[in-house]
Length: 513
Ligand code: BES
Ligand code: MN
Ligand code: ZN
Image (cartoon, rainbow, N blue to C red; front, side, top):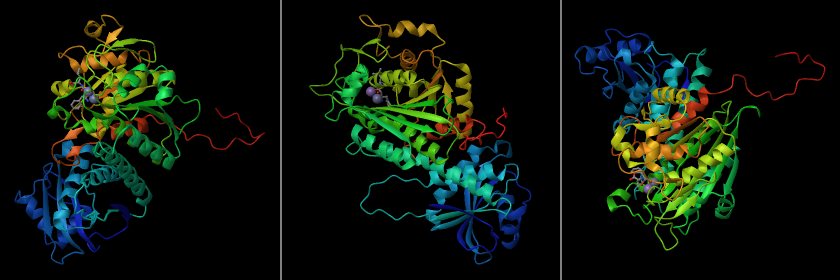
């Protein structure tokens, strides 16, 4: 889908559909909405007054225009109450509209923003994100249909045009990042393994001019990453550690670390999962998918920050070479880990990745991982579990997620010493499981042993990685969760001025502070 910005008269413009998002409780309309209403002989206000269209979140209503205006239909889409006129509700309204367009046989649409309580650029960015995510579809069917929606045009005045164009581009890139994460995570396990994931990551890095390093198994062993090496041993396709660097700020700016769990398929290993438990495990690299997609977008947006992504990737399979319950492995920081359950593999590969993040001096470090089924039990299916060792960082990530609409709930971790006992090892420093109770918290506490002093935040996306239905901007299958929160986090952390590209001329007063 192409997003355009144009100076048009909405009443005359030729298009299949005009998308008009509205809040609840409109008694009158203004601007373009009023003009449309007039040309349609009052039809918009009539359906509002008769409560046929109330503007509730998720509600849409199509009015056919019968030649009264240039467009064939006007699609009203509800945002919800005026008090709840948030970016996320606007994003959802746009996505709900996008979901209606194929049924209306619309291939071209014009998007009209008329809720004056929201800044136009804010609205356009949110709308672009919603439209892009709401039109996503993953399908491998014999009769692939051609893309249904060709273009959406945002209306702007001459003065607004550049700002609106930039906003549409930001939204398109952010929504596109979620869709890329979905594509990576939805890819079938026969096609997505540590090797192919590395190739994808390399392709992204090359396209965006990022520094890319892929550490192979031998290097993983030489670097002392005994935990990652152990988990990767069961598969014929060896493990890898991927490092991608984006530098959008000066050398003196500490890079932010993004770490993503990249288990391309989690069978549980020798502690084999049940058939039912294995169904969704192609999505066990959703953390990696989100991090890679975020890097792709961060580079496209040229954010003024430095970011390093680390992705440990393995296939967790049983075989005669596989690591076994009872094995004791040594992580990069020298800590020994007793393996009680080979299905608690995510924390093992993340242990070495977090050590590496800390050795590279990254700060803060945010990891995203489909880590524990226990997290779904704790926070429910629509919420990501958030853990950390630094309250300011925790608040910052929570505020960011509030804006992106990727719901998160803070659970205790490093601040509660009671959890220490639960994963203390008998023969080793720690063990890789701490029992059923508080499983998401003991997993987070396990990770803390490998990052310690660095400000760190762990996002357990086990419950939010997948959705069983299409709903506003969420799509059935893998959700691509986390990508937008990572991008937004980096965007909000940008250094004030762009990096100085030109050296000051010699002799010209360099007294500026
Ligand atoms: N990848 C799973 C967690 C998971 C479960 C993600 C369901 C998404 C949906 C993880 O590797 C795992 O198997 N965790 C175990 C840990 C247990 C053995 C301590 C779990 O949650 O059962
Ligand atoms: Mn597992
Ligand atoms: Zn797993």
